[in-house]
Image (cartoon, rainbow, N blue to C red; front, side):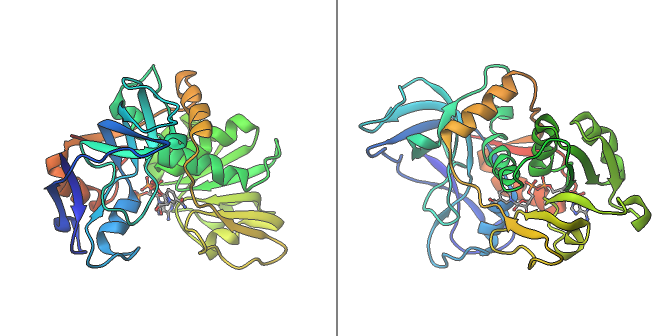
Length: 301
Ligand SMILES: NC(=O)c1ccc[n+]([C@@H]2O[C@H](COP(=O)([O-])OP(=O)(O)OC[C@H]3O[C@@H](n4cnc5c(N)ncnc54)[C@H](OP(=O)(O)O)[C@@H]3O)[C@@H](O)[C@H]2O)c1
């Protein structure tokens, strides 16, 4: 099969599409024939060596939508099931940017029925991250929440899920993204070119910092509030009684199934910017590196 990997860290040109053995599922694993797989910021981190693994072949890709094609013993899935899954792992020999991927059975959920695989491929990593980040806020309906990077993948899902949970959500995003983030359920909007007068004077009860603004975003939390970041172990130190935490996504098929249900109910919207054939994975990385992409870039084997 073909698979996108890096063998030498670097820029987009470091991404190679190589021939690899089709992986076999072990016990409690399934093999998925990949229909579509999204490209995410974590893939750029892997490519550039941010997570180590020098000297090894490292497979790229965490998000997958496709069809179960082989099952190990004690798998809860059947050949032919249409699924989505999270292929967790920064340094792994093969990832989801491939023709086939093997994942743990409990990382899998039935695919949404209202969207195609290209759209569904944008769900697992970022919707799970948003949901698990909101868990760290100890949801309390009516509380105010600022989501930075609200037009991005994590931020966008967070706005939709938080609004549904009853938070009063303010979205911080680029000026041109106002209409979009309001359509996701943000009650208020702050432009990335904000002035301090735009911010709530007493601060927000909580900030979910998907734009990775760090200390700056911490300042927007009221005394005794909560800051949740998206870079594991890199949250600012607590200050003024503000509790700080960072989410680290984990594969959770049951949770993913709930998110799939929200897609099918029209609560969560999936946004695709462009698709690329797997062979053009390096081109997709180059486009992501340019910035300003709205919606996911999706690779199709
Ligand atoms: N901890 C975990 O388990 C986990 C899981 C998934 C993702 N992540 C991390 O979460 C972060 C977000 O991921 P993503 O996929 O959502 O990225 P994304 O789709 O690129 O979204 C980031 C958004 O933030 C915006 N932004 C950047 N600087 C801003 C600023 N100063 N003010 C307002 N908006 C700003 C970007 O706009 P422009 O494009 O215009 O710059 C973009 O819309 C990444 O760092 C990713 O690695 C962590």
